[in-house]
Image (cartoon, rainbow, N blue to C red):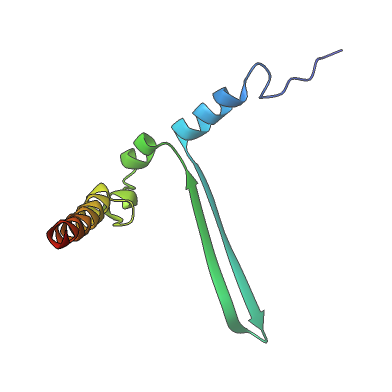
Length: 96
């Protein structure tokens, strides 16, 4: 009797995750709501799961230009907060 084997035999979750991140996975789909041939709503869903290295390799680098993810924005915010607190501290010292 032949034994049934599965592609995940001998693989841990970490092995599978490593393969997925190394190769990348693309999930794409469209949702369209129509009434009487009139489009009411269209949603396009595109999901890419890959490692940062793989994403860079295929030309995806959106996080590098996103100001909310940029370190320079956070540094500027911290500098502004520091300057404000320093000014308030100087003002308090001048009062006493």
